[in-house]
Amino acid sequence: WPNLTMRNYIKLIALIGVVLSLVKCSTTKNLQNCEQIQISNQTKVSILTKADYLLKENLSGYELIILNGSILKTITSLVTPQIVFCIAGKEVVAYGNPLLNSSIPETAKYFYGLSINNEIQLSTGNTILLVNTKKVTKKS
Image 1 (spheres, one colour):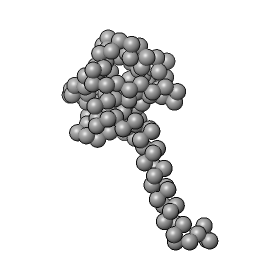
Image 2 (cartoon, one colour):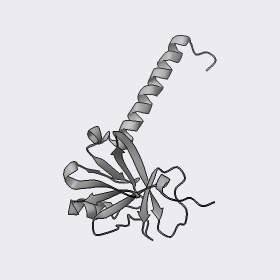
Image 3 (cartoon, helix red, strand yellow):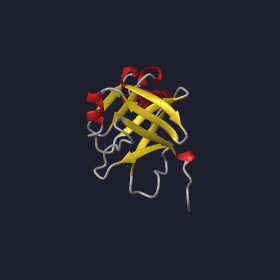
Image 4 (cartoon, helix red, strand yellow):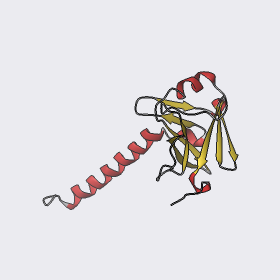
């Protein structure tokens, strides 16, 4: 770094900016103007279009209702996936939380239940509850 000229320093900063924007785009697939939901783990990515789901607000957060049976089968077999969705035009990530765990993920704004096999736990036949951590009482 000591021999880095100002011109090369500026190029390096620009390159870092490009790389960071590419990482963000590849991580969330841009969700096409918040019309899509991404459910993924380290090995598989499922993109849900508006025809595949309903997102309904409830008292604790949201209900993600999966309308496409083949997608439901795929995502419920993913181990510890993340769910990326949009609220008011901003991307939000929901993290899985084991049902028997008495705490909630510290950095999560939303979470959903994981089965004993660390797969998505459905609240009803095709519904995933996305719980807002601000609406959960935290005990110390």
